[in-house]
Structure formats: structure tokens, C-alpha cells
Amino acid sequence: MTHDQHDVDDHVDHTTGHQQTHGHAHGHNHAHGPADYGRAFAIGVALNLSFVLVEAVFGVIGHSLALLADAGHNLSDVLAMLMAWGATALARRPPSVRFTYGLRSSSILAALANAVFLLVVTGGIAWEAIQRLLQPAPVDGGIVIGVAAFGVLINTGTALLFMAGRKGDMNVRAAFLHMASDAVVSLGVVIAGIVMLFTHWFWLDSTVSLLISAVIVIATWGLLRDSTQLALHGVPEGIETEVVRAYLATLPNVTAVHDLHIWAMSTTETALTAHLVMPNGYPGDALLNQIGDELQLRFRIDHPTLQVETGDPAHPCALAPDHRV
Image (cartoon, rainbow, N blue to C red; front, side, top):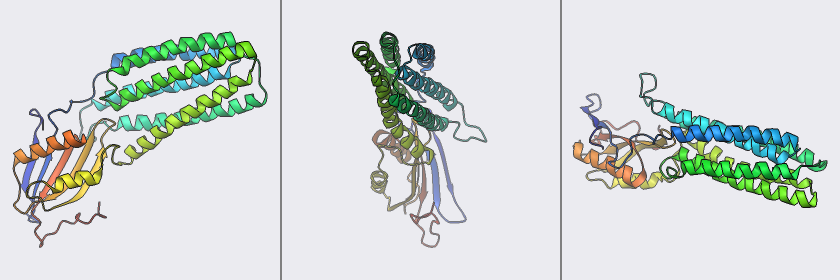
């Protein structure tokens, strides 16, 4: 628990005879909220939105579906950055009587919406590519090369804006990976343009579009899976429930652990609730603080809430069975 945040409510439930404690314990090394990358998001959105317009215009002029496909991809990235930027701002809003956790979960909804949008756009691009592959049309290789090369510079520059924060924030890391992968995709379009310029293999334009679509689907499927899991209050990746349970069970004077739940409050914060059976009663604030620190350091769980029960057989906890939630 940080020294500046300590919220513990210790009371005796006179209806059950259980001594209970509900506490928030944040690790000493936990950063208070995500870093502010508003400037990086603003620059990234401006650069990529301009590039989307350039790609779309020259894609039509040069009859290049590969450029139009990449423009659609980059447009989805602009929307993704806007949603991530907005979600980051919403996550900073304080809790209210209606939203007692604040609006942290908006970052999860943004990721889920972005994944669905990407798949829909990619499906349309892939369908058009198949139609064009059956009837290849002439493509201006010079335009394809020039615009895609410009895209390599734009995407690489945008990725560098997020590189420093990619290890500490899932949204920032996602933005970095999106832009880095876009740079690689644009490089592939450059290569395709060079080949078409010298060989007139115009079918290569549609083939590259399908390859770009496949890359997007592969990358987006993981985002869709992970964001759906978080939206359904699934345990975040990298945290094993049974390992956490085993740690809690080894705490001093703990004889049982039940009603254990672990879920994501946002794309960067994880919450936990659990009932600890401690026959000797409430162990004191010092142990709760230590547990909070250990949960953060070992499992990156930022918001634990623990309830202590004495295990009185005359008043068993109704939530003790694993199937009860």
C-alpha cells in the first residue's frame, strides 16, 4: 500500500459473527495512473490521418488496391489511437456514486470496439482484392512506390513516439506495435510496386492486399480475444489464479481461501477480491499492507480487497463453495 492511500474498514459483522476487513492495498512500486501520452497521440493521429488521405487519393489515381487496403488499415489505426487516447482520458476521471470504479473499463471497451471494426474493414478489403485478382487492372507502380515509401517514414516516426512507454502501458504498447507493423506492411507495398514497375505483374497488387488483410486478421484476432476476455472479467494474461490462491493460503494464520476473483479494471490495472479464513481474527493493518505490496510485486495486482473471517462453523460463509459467485 502506498503511504498516500490507505483505506481499510475493519468491523465485526454481528449477524454472522465473522470479523471482516475490506482494504485497498497498492504496491509501493505501482505508478498512480497511466503516463500522459496525449502529445504523442495527437501527433500520431495528425500524421497518420494525413497519410490516410494521401494513400486514398493516390490509390484511386494509381488504381492500386494495395494502397487502398493500406489506407483502410491506417485509418483503423487512427481510430484505434483516438479511442485509446479518449479511453486514457476517461480512465483519469475520479470515481462517482454511479461509477464507483471511475471509467477505467473504457480502455477495454475501446480495444474491443477497435478489434471488431478492424475485422469488418479487413473483410471488405479482402473481398475487393479477390474480385480484382480475378480481373487484374493496370497499376501505376511509380505511385505505389512513392506513397508506400512515405508511409514507411510516417509509421516509423509514429512508432518512435510510443517506444519509450511500450513496456509500462498496454495501450501505449499496442500503439507502438500497430505503427511498427504498419511500417513493415508499407515496406511490403514498396517491394510490390517495384516488382510491378518492371514486370507488369498487376495481379501482385491484389495479392499484396490479401497478404495485408491476413496480417491484420492475425494481429486483430489476438486483440479481439484478449479484449473480449477482459470485458467478460476474465483473469488477465500473465496471472495464474491458482498461483495467487496458493500464495494467499501460505499467509500467516490463514487456514482457507475462498471467493477468490481476479479481473481487469482497465487495460493497465487488475483487481482482486478474496475471503481469508483466519481463526485468530483480524491480523492488523501491517499484514494487510504487506499482502498488498506482495500482490502488486508478484502478480501486478493493483487493487486487492480482502475479507477476513474466523471460520466459525456455526456461521459458515455462504460464498465458500467454489461454484458460488
